[in-house]
Image (cartoon, rainbow, N blue to C red; front, side):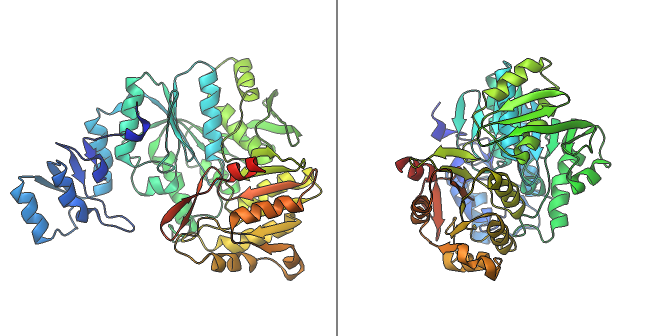
Length: 470
């Protein structure tokens, strides 16, 4: 299959690229654009039905166009719910024949999802994956448009899974996807709540709204075993509101007990319920939580513990998540997606004891959560010896303004650690020039993303390629 053609033309969609003869086009009012402006294009491409929310207005010219082409016009209470419901129906409710495993939380979703998928596949199960990094059906890999895709894409994905015999679909569940009704009609066989911390203040007016959005996965969509992190106070407090919850812990708080037996730059050994699990592609206590969460889920389906142990030994990690590079001068660089205060603290706290010199390179995404910028600066300054402040998808913002906001969180006593270099490639080569044997360089924020988004233009940019070129 040509991956660039997936999902192809769809029977129901909100995107004109997927409209073909006989398609139902659902008009969605987006954050930046209104789908109503695309009705003429949808009709030109063959749409025979237009679905629109009843409180939306249609211009007289578009009404005349709809009437002229004899296109059916349907009004609904919620266009987003309609998109999910009609997409599921059009594909014959494919998710009903699959075991869906959903992971939500501020951090750890991607790694936990990759771990579960890898372990189940290693056990001989037929799997699919929906993640921030990539989507996968058996061995077919597809680009990931969103952490949790739109319903028209989702149900086309599920339909292909059903057609090729997939048994398990492991998917990251973003809070926004829950708030925007992308998961309407879906029921999960197993769910995980990894943790909760500050993020997405650009989307949610309060952090409580953000938290409640995540909670709705378990209150509305969970239809099986639920696993939650007992060491996260907010998550643990919420657990009492759900049925069938098992709490896992590294601090002796939950019903499922774990501990870190060994953690160094090349190996992590976690003891879970009296059994040792060895992983080479991850490090740090925060990774141990992801491993334990994944083991909780997989043990429901794979009874042979030795299969799980062997799978974890063979796990090579996740692209852009603590991706390790040994440099020519014997310094070690890690590329990671960390972009919140809590993820900075967890990751840099894990790296700090492993080196005498820690260099951190980061920026902050433009048009996104501004509250966290000085907090990340403060945390980086606490752990690092040198800090390169640089760009990270500035989008419509001035990169220098973003860097200034980050630096505001850094105490005067640590200002001497700052090196401002807005060219991210120069920041990387500059950090390498400062490094020596045993130095750790942490490149944070971009993870697997291989572009810089500046003023609406995505410019190719690969941190991995820059490091390999060294």
